[in-house]
Structure formats: C-alpha cells, structure tokens
Length: 186
Image (cartoon, rainbow, N blue to C red; front, side, top):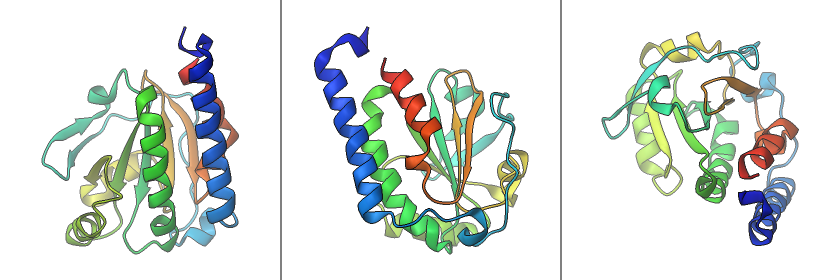
C-alpha cells in the first residue's frame, strides 16, 4: 500500500508538520463562528450523506455531488467581505497544493454576496484560486448544507458522506481533518 512506502510516510509527515507549523506561525488564534462575521452554524450531522447539489464553476462547468463521487472533497463556503475568509483562503491554497497528489480536492463556494463581488475577488486573487471555485446562486447550496457562518468547511469522503463540518477559522488544525488525511494516504 501507499503508506508502506517510507518516502511517502516522510513526505506526508513533512506536509502535515508544515501545515501545522505554518498555521501556528501565521494563523493566529482560532476564531469561533461568531467571530467570523456571519453568525452561528449547527451544520450537518457527520457521517450522513451530503445533500444533492449542483453548482456552476467560475469557468462555466457544472459540478455536482455525483460528479464529486469517488474523490474526497473539502468544500469551503466563503464570502469576499469576510475577513476571516480572506486570511484562510491562502492557507487553503497551500493546503490544496500539498494534498492534491493524494486525491483530496478543494471546492470553494462563494455565497452570501453578489456574484460580481465573488467573481471580482476570485479574479483579483487568481494566484490563490487554483482549486475548483463556484458561486452559489441564491445561497441554495449553503441553505441545503445548513451553512450559517463564513467560512464554513465541509469535508466529504469519496462516498459523499459528510465527515467534518467546521465553522470559522482553523480547519487545518482540526484533528478530524488530520486523521482523515492520514487514512487517505495509508
């Protein structure tokens, strides 16, 4: 298996340590969802199937729950006016670059703002948005996922089950995410 390869174990350990250290150095304190600027979130129950959804990506492609099937995905619900999101997005970019060889993808979902504002932010920060990005028209997907805070992260496994709901900053420090990553590369 992949995990039995000593080089792979060392690379993963280095990536994990790098993420943790970078988060400690640059992440500052973890903010609660109330501090994130959009309210609180009860979120979805973990280990339940994610709701069906369909979004159009910024480049005009359709992305849906069924299209994600077979590939674990970290969804980030965010808004351009959210200062916590602005801090978290570069960290998510670095995280995405580190984990994409292991099959985990990132999907950013802009919501709670006008489409032009979301597109403007994405285009103005194209060096960060190297992962899939979509706009949630009428916040319908966010409503289905019970998102009430920006940012909120939802981790879907390869079967489309919700493995983690994390409102606010600090998702890269979440032990459930780190455990999921360890299982992914083993």
